[in-house]
View 1 (cartoon, rainbow, N blue to C red):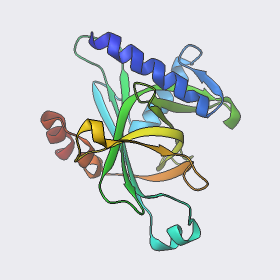
View 2 (cartoon, one colour; view 1 turned 30 degrees about the vertical axis):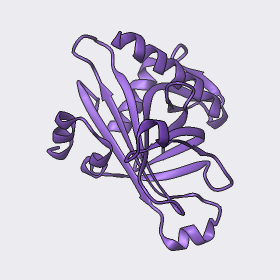
View 3 (spheres, rainbow, N blue to C red; view 1 turned 180 degrees about the horizontal axis):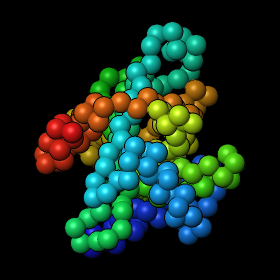
Length: 205
């Protein structure tokens, strides 16, 4: 059952690759995807690895981008080999604060390697949210110190409301299509984690 769910979410992630013209998984060179993983996680991921990226936009930036809806964003990317498998699964968790709305919003889903043909065959993650929830593309800056997030639409939830009331979407606008987040200590992304064991692991890294 777990594997079936993961495959359906991975398929959704592949669909998200449509946000940047490219091919996903089937045509991926293993050496290139492994090299991308080392860049993302700063080492071969092994059994489990995390990468955390954060951006809090200052008043000057927001003044220059008056149509930007987002005031802060966090991204946690996870690579994990489940105990009953021998392949690596990739997932993301996204935290969003809005400029003119109160509350914390978040999203999550699974990721697959993609090759962005419109960016010189750049390797990225295409990450999707289940049930037609859209998703994000995640690339790295040339120095690997930042993540570049691209989106058209991604389903998000306000985490202090019941599910039936909390659903919303972050939709790309004039200033909300591409976000550059800085790599930071993994503990900065602890607020995105709900599992107690995983939270403890992140806080003690």
